[in-house]
Image 1 (cartoon, helix red, strand yellow):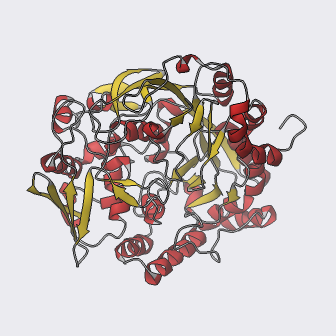
Image 2 (cartoon, rainbow, N blue to C red; image 1 turned 90 degrees about the vertical axis):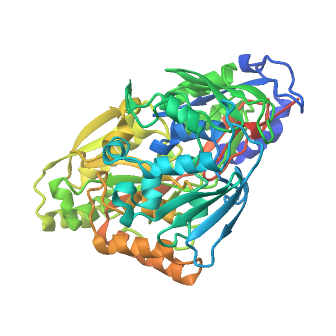
Image 3 (tube, rainbow, N blue to C red; image 1 turned 90 degrees about the horizontal axis):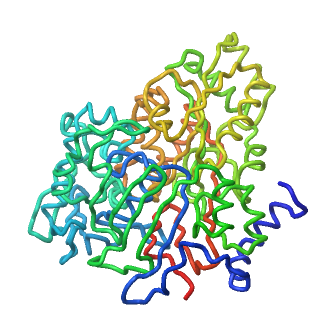
Length: 552
């Protein structure tokens, strides 16, 4: 980084910048021109920059971070992630009870809640949503390979005997029961994700939510996927290629906060986001990149860091010939100098990843890490495997930043150079994020290698391991019936030592077979203008703008 201060000292000063911001002249941003907010009625306008547009505004069909960011403002689930612990807390359900056999959950619903279209939220609405997700057809699922219901419940109505989900039953207008075919310990945590946010049944019907008859740069989507209707603190008002506009919902059941009008504006480069914040055109942005830290801290702009709860990884597709060999995959793992990548492109305190769950979770196995950096050993393994220089297509995204992958093109250049050094033939395959990168690398194809990451959508090892390796996917082309069975068993075990031991065993097996290479547990951050008193950072990204506090 240019300049005379080190990145460590800059980041150490970032926390102080939050305090010092009040002493720093504010550039009077356009978004801040509205009158001071009152407790009774939100009045502020707020513009927040994001790196890419959402792939869909229907959170049931995607796991895209920007889609989920918007979903968290517009829709809500039965339970939410607690802002402090990330554990399940009341949302549209005020309480719940688990049966003694762990096979059913009865939810008591919040009464007097309305959707943004004026229709009532009740048990029938909850059932309509669960029935919809369960009924997704194979064709619909093929077009939306990262949908949350599939990862969590494993199968849909056309394969009901394989599904963890059995039924959602209305007990009364304010009570529903979810029945399972087998125990699933992380159910409540999984339900905190936007994949299980409740949409207005009337809006789903009016927007033909299950008919993908609209086209966008990401691919096909429904009319509902362009105009979601939920119960959240903000309602959807407008969408353009470079922005989403939301408005505070007057009849919201909870705290409305200070923001009356919220704009999520697309700035697809880190430099453009920094310039916009310094110039006062925006009030904040996510994600924060290494090269953005110094100018912002020098100018007295607050930075809020998140605790690490994601994994950045190199994906490997075993449908591509050479990658079917374990020795080739192990060689690739040994060829990557993770510390060098982290030092250059990630925020301070990002740590090297040795497995696919963060250290804070039960089941982390400190003695079962992937092999470390050893380029000479990598060369020997490639020779033993009979690798003859076959070209490997390496996909990476353009014009985006993600919380787990702040500078994709630069990271690609570093990793591809390391792989080339040990004798691998790499073919660069740059793909615009907004033109369907996520869909391209998570479905079957000729991509050999790719860069991606996973944010812990919920605070449980299942949120990482089952989503990535619980079944054969087009992303990895990886099939291991024994491992799939072990993951299924671990999901059923109650909290405790047996469950932690099961996940430790799974992590050891993954380290041995190397279906992908974990690289980093990234620290991510949000930058805001000095008018922001606090921003509600969350390790699981459960961040809603009604909880943003502005200085008065």
